[in-house]
Length: 79
Image 1 (cartoon, rainbow, N blue to C red):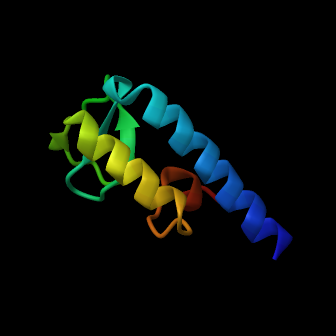
Image 2: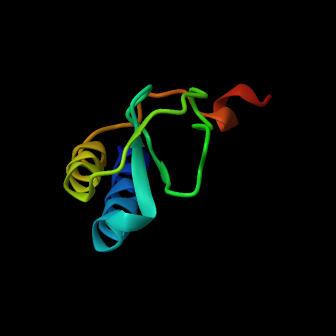
């Protein structure tokens, strides 16, 4: 249980950073991940379509901060 709480606290911390600077991020339309604005191809799903509206970025950051990670990221694929 403590590990799960730690993970959620870390996600909330990242969400606050995104909320303070939403112009530095965008939401991937392929997997709903939040990535840096400078990224051309999503590192998680390799999509190249993004939503950059700051209100949507903030809303997605808040939504992701309240739940466990469901997407597969590149770190999950390295053994």
